[in-house]
Image (cartoon, rainbow, N blue to C red; front, side, top):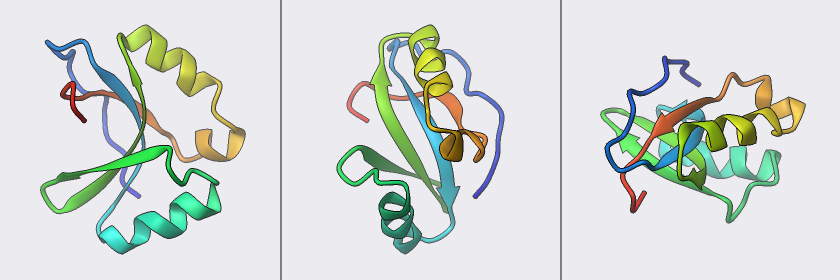
Length: 88
């Protein structure tokens, strides 16, 4: 997994929690199974990385509040709030 800084504010007002990023797309399904996230996450390809996103929030404050409520196992991965396009 790769850590990075928070994204700049989005003009669309859409935010998600980026849980982790993987170099290989086939790493996503085992991760989803391990944390019981099947059907709850989406993947966005960014350059050579596959970012695993959770949730869709209207503003950064809502996303940060949801991040604080994540189970400890997910918070230990150092997830971050990031801006996304409305359809992501």
